Each structure stands twice: as C-alpha cells, then as structure tokens.
Length: 86
Image (cartoon, rainbow, N blue to C red; front, side, top):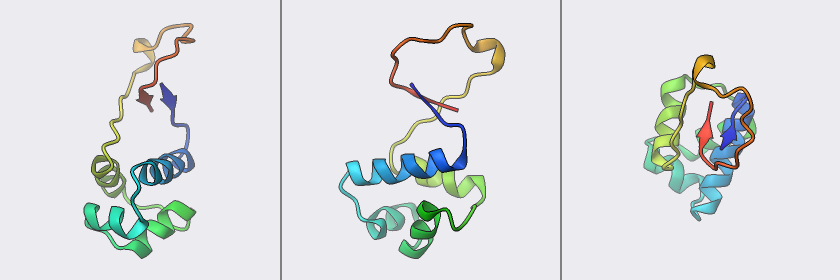
C-alpha cells in the first residue's frame, strides 16, 4: 500500500503510472479530456487543479484510491500490501 501525503505524491504517482503504461503526456491528457500543456503543468507542480480534474486523471490511468478513517486504521500497519491509500 502506498500512502499519499501531499499533492506532490499524487503528481509523482500520475507521472510514474503514465510512463509505466507507455503513454506520452499528450496521450494521457487526451484520454482524460485535457491538454498536454495542462498535464505538463500539473506534473511539474505549476498548477493546483480542482479535485474533480485530478480524480478524472487518476481514473483514466486506472489508479484506484482507498480512504481509511482514523478508526479504520490498525495501530501498527507494517504489512506489505501494495494498495494505494490516502
């Protein structure tokens, strides 16, 4: 499980998943309905878009997010899961 602590972690995740899938910025942005320029600015940290735009991009790249409330989290979570959580 990967923990996302900041928008920069999300940017890094988007960039690495886009590259893992072999997509250019133009291809990934087009699939999400955005421009290559927007994705370039997002990955570089030049823009802070509304959450719905980020969620659309994550969905397009097949990235699933899981949210745990504090009471859902185990006291000692040192397991090796590879899911992604906020």
